[in-house]
Image 1 (cartoon, rainbow, N blue to C red):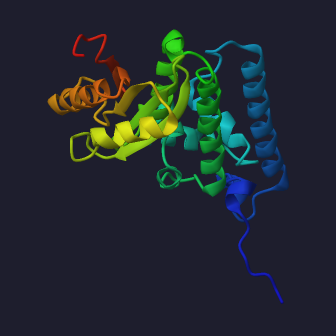
Image 2: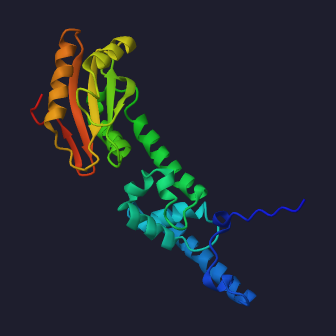
Image 3: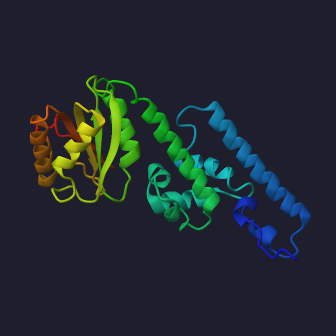
Length: 255
């Protein structure tokens, strides 16, 4: 039976205008491939020889897309991604379905970009695992910022700590608005007892980008702290993450 499936155009690379035009000469197509290979080689050399700022953000995306688009120009796709999501972190933290809404991005490209975001999270998470969290505070903030700053929905997490303030559970407590209906102090404390935690850090993000605490943020923190007092479980802090930075309620003097 004849195989009528279309080829994977993403894996083959988008054809250039000349190569897609009937009658284009083999010499012209060969020149285009040579020019593309030369650009990729130059970009690779700059990446290997240069420092942290060797490549612009769109060039970083270009290089990441090389693995998914074996031929063709990735610069246009890289710039379209930046225009759509606003920044390199915005691109890498975007959902696969959202990435594929950008012209030229297919499943293979979306997977390549998501793998980089996953690797970054795991690398930064390793800096806070099995270490006293309070002594690795900046590493914790870096990890939380990479993981949560660009989320489009509000997410509440509770970091449960042992007696040495090491992370024993990173629990996703709630998706949605942080208020008494969304996160119950008794449920937070029940899980603390279940995992044997002696302390915790509350964390959530503000999709608006502004990490300043709301009245509801402060109120629910006080309720959880009050519940913890009766069980000997300390709430060290409540950290709010946003694109514009982070706010520690303890550092702010709110708790």
